[in-house]
Amino acid sequence: MESSEAIERDFKAKVADELRIVSEGINRFVVVTPMTFGDGDGLPIVLRKRNDGWYLTDEAHTFLQLSYRLSDEELDEPPRKELIDRILSSFEIENKNGELILPIPDHRFGDALYTFIQALLKIDDIRYLSKERVQSTFLQDVRSYLEKIVTPQRITANWHDPERDRPGIYPVDYRVNGMKTPIFIFAINSEHKADIATISLLKFEQWKLNYKSVGIFDEMENFNQRTIARFVDACGKAYSTLDVAKESLPRFVPELLSSDG
Image 1 (cartoon, rainbow, N blue to C red):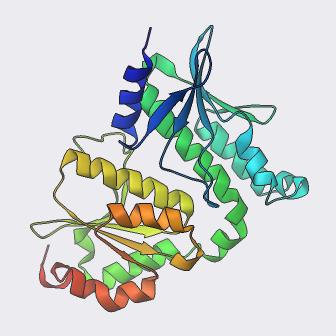
Image 2: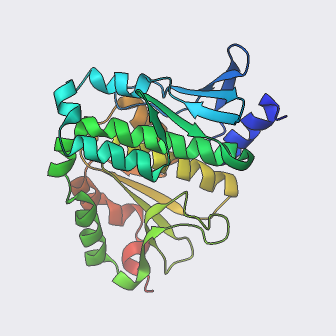
């Protein structure tokens, strides 16, 4: 039988060292993570055990959280409902009368927790759907800017460490090589994206990778301050907008302009 200490170690290894679990009842543990929803509330994650094994549950709090911002009609209308169903399906999460449940297969506690966190954050982003549509060109705008100042062959999109992270769990939007120290660039256009980027950076630090990190926000003023603080603590340099990045990024990393890949 798995001990809570062993499960917590696996959680920390796959997600974040700041994570902890708190026992509340028989075979019920609250999972406390550094990630939050867009309004700053902590993610509602509980580890429980039933006859057929361990599972993660939000105990129906995620949809309750959404209901504070969106009406039932808004949640049920396309494209929100379709997007929610697609998220649950892609992460293999069961919706049991509003309670989100993810069984933990083959004692892979850390992998399951990382998957569950991503799903909850993506669902929370549903409330910003209309804003995200307006901002849909942001990622391409960042890519286009990089290709203007850097030889395109030096840019690798959606990079992940080929040795330590073959499945691509800890992605980097754009890796720029061609110099002694590669540059990892994150294009942050949602609360979910900021939290996942923070997790990736913390993991890279744990792996002791050699890199410079840059975060470019799509209007930082629209983000929760705690989300920003966590990301800024993990990232080497963060810019509040793409326009600000265009003005000072070459000064922060002159290698972008001076090296040739």
